[in-house]
Image (cartoon, rainbow, N blue to C red):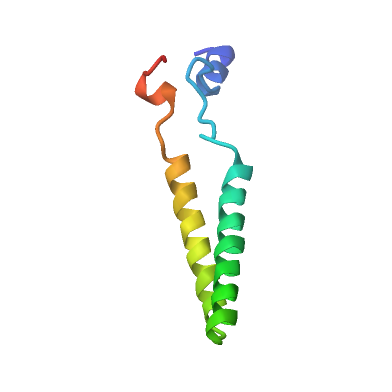
Length: 87
């Protein structure tokens, strides 16, 4: 085996498609941040209305969980390339 052949066999094949992110990372950041802010605000408003002091923490946790859930759903959708759909 020549040196060129051994180098070529060690190089990655450029014909295979590269794995790219399925969406914009800023969109994931936006989902999580807006969930925390929105549900944190709802928790704060409920705290003021009910006279409690713990609903803001519940709102922040629920908002973060829903933001992560929405991000998970968004980034796990199959792309057109994966499904073969050419619409």
